[in-house]
Amino acid sequence: MFKKILIANRGEIAIRIARACHEMGIATIGVYSTVDANSCHLWYMDEAVCIGDPAPGASYLNIQTIIEQARKTGAQAIHPGYGFLAENARFVKACEDAGIVFIGPSSRAMSLVGDKVASRNTVRHVDVPIIPGMQASSTDLVEFKSMADRVGYPVIVKASMGGGGKGMRIVRSEQELEASVNAGQREAQSAFGDATVFLEKYIEKPRHIEFQVIRDTHGNVVHLYERECSIQRRHQKIIEETPSPALDNALRTKMGEAAKRVIEAADYTNAGTVEFLVDQNKKFYFLEVNARVQVEHPITEMVTGIDLVRQQILVAAGGKLGFQQKDISQRGHAIESRIYAEDPDNNFMPSPGKILFLLEPSGPGIRVDSGISQGWDVPPHYDPILSKLITWAETREISLARMSHTLENYIILGIKTNIGFLKRIMDTEKFITGEYHTHFIDDNEEALIPQHENITQVLIAASLIKTLRRTGVSAQIASKAAQVHKITTPWQELGSWEICRH
Ligand code: MV4
Image (tube, rainbow, N blue to C red):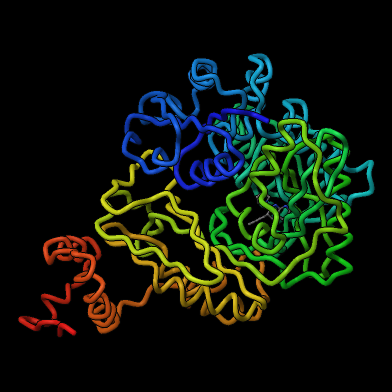
């Protein structure tokens, strides 16, 4: 087993990885940019090294510097987390060339699954349904036209090296096709440095359901069931749950087996996620493979009892999976809410700044994977994810109630967050019944629009007063926080009123 791992990430995922390392007796090297010198992921590391300026390109994306630091500190392996270099095949290759183990798939498998057209061709041969469309990329408009006629409008143009919706264009008629292909190519070139696009039939209002898979270097492969990820906004997932309310056991088994065939066909090792779209007739189609530990991995851990990061490290060290498919089952129901520093009142603009007061929830069936602390300044340079709140319970109904209640008890003052928005989703009918798809947020815009009821704010402020006093938060800090949040403090609201001392 490795003695030392470099964790090439920041925030909550760096902490999550460090915890797994320490439980396995592995020392951790943390990295940070100059703006992260006081960030709390470093508290969890045995050593920490500065890797450059705040701009991601100068630090967390700097392949040379990170490999050099791994060498210098004697790290035998690098865990990339998610984002940054996690799915960069050049980085994986650089690790391989430097004799450092990349905790993830080989550069070869990474390149294959990173290319959407190539992965469509790979899975086609192993009896996995794919969305009708092109099997080769093309620059010839005639080929786009003829494929669109064959599968029928609407169609979708996608970037072959894409992800996250960039370079994607929905096309509803032949008149729009040429302009959409051109625009898709331009966007793909600027976002991914590769203008290759292809065309598929557009699936209306699909659900996005993904399967967690893990495969060791000895050819053993298991799936750890699904995650329902349809609640997203602009291709950013915000709530995930498992089991999916849309799957019955027959379909679940079929999709799980298909996911394993995808991973085997790509000769993919380590943890990976196979994404599917499920249409309104419950037909499923392969979408793509995510070659990383995902933001939403905790819900899988909660229902299967398997520590995914631990398994990633074991597999990367050449170990065999300690379980078979028959050993794995789903127990209970888990939901994850992603907490972001963003302002739902202002088009979800990022809201960096100082966290003046922080109270994170805890309790039975509650897990908080957090990367923040009171007094810390959320920098503007990175993804604004602050933490993840995960609830588990025996049934979906209880898990949902637990999430709804727990969101209310998650208090972050000083910056704007999406906590209120998440709470409103929990209380929306179609979420409660489980009848939702990828367009849920657009379709429910009205119910999800923030309500500005001053009385609610006063009640919240009043209920906070005990906590504020108990934790020694001064009236000045509360008033600063109130200014940022455009609310009044209990001190202002209640005049010279004093709390009773019991
Ligand atoms: C689609 C689709 C409908 N039809 N492909 C969006 C991100 C990228 N990974 C694939 N995406 C989609 N591809 C066809 N042929 C709808 C989406 C899509 C979507 C997929 C997953 C999660 C959220 C989504 C939101 C809008 C559209």
